[in-house]
Image 1 (tube, helix red, strand yellow):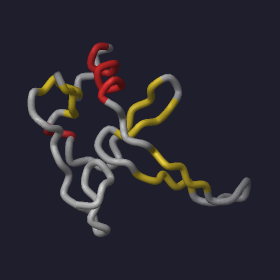
Image 2 (spheres, rainbow, N blue to C red):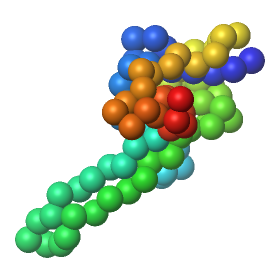
Image 3 (cartoon, helix red, strand yellow):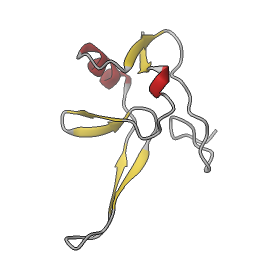
Length: 90
């Protein structure tokens, strides 16, 4: 049995969850940018894609935007660089 984000949220490329203190992307990998301030320079963090085991953990712990599915995860339209939901080039 596979797990996926429900359809209403599947088109949000920066949807995240926190698992054991780590931020994971639920739909697509992305780079989070914190702008520079007086206190420090701009920072960038790569947010990796969630695994099926992590989706199961979220589902089992009551996250209501994760569902069990026999089908493939919903696909995001390719971005300007041709990457789809999984970060892979189509």
